[in-house]
Image (cartoon, rainbow, N blue to C red; front, side, top):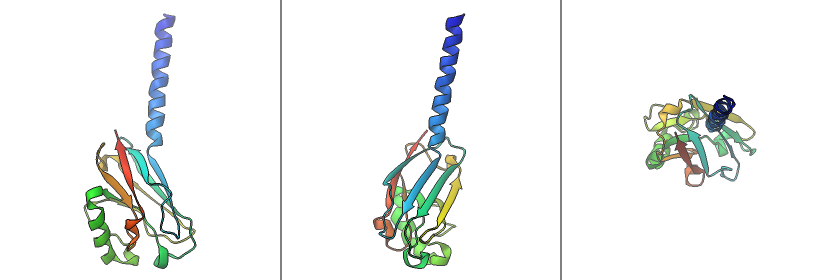
Length: 152
């Protein structure tokens, strides 16, 4: 009887540990600066998260009109086209076409000292898919980009 109880407790703890690990993959924190750099080049999220949150902090001092940053998530193959098409939206539109079906999620454009977040359902991503995160401010996606790894 004690062996069965211990086994159940152990199995329960493993389940909780697995849930905690998955829960830890539901938020991505990214910092961008005035040197057109993100502080990370890859992030991992779980497609099983009810909600995935991307938090962007602009650690620089320049205003959004001069050195604004956002974070856009799209399939890696669509990154260049999404960034190019976003230019038409201008700074007022956060350099992103909100109606673009290739955009999984996008934060607003922020300047130095500001923070922004975007939340979206994990089911918008496919585990094992090839995704990128990038800044769509004109010219920034060449340097400010990374790989988004999606697990189950």
